[in-house]
Length: 250
Image (cartoon, rainbow, N blue to C red; front, side):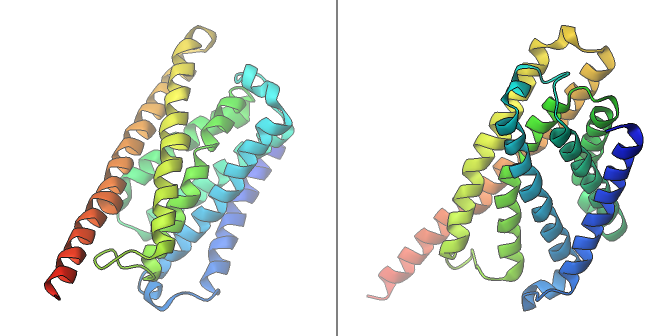
């Protein structure tokens, strides 16, 4: 794609995700989620992006496995479009968060989106490092389960203070498992790759990649810790409390 076509894809993607967000407004919404209707729509839109780009990234490497041998200059039309579409989503979500949530609550996500938009914009414009950008989109496989978990909590279909539903428990463990593989593992691999190929990159690109990976990796480790506390440690305490209650019945 030339620059004009790339800009059209990015702009079209931004508008398309805004349209998805609007469509979700008119879909049936759980009664409890109505109290946080904007958040329900935002996470639902994010889930659509994660499913599209996570599967799309895996498909890119399946159709063109040679991209793994050259993440700097090798790319396909499919991978170029995928990164452009994802850039459009992050622009949409940045604006959605900035307009509907206070900076105090959303600054981490806004920072994350700023780094992704900067890195992806360079990749789609220059058509270099598109393979590296597609590798980063494999992280979205984990985001699918992360967003499903958030929607389950918003819908009120699970109560962690009593006993999590089976659906929530399965989703929680899938989320933690894919987080280790597709978030921590992928980001760790990307960091090693970046350091090993430093000599082949312009200093600006290396600095942008280093800062972006540092920010996103730090946020991912903090996310993993929060999920462990919320879904493993607290659930273990609740389970012990339930057992104690059962014993007191006899």
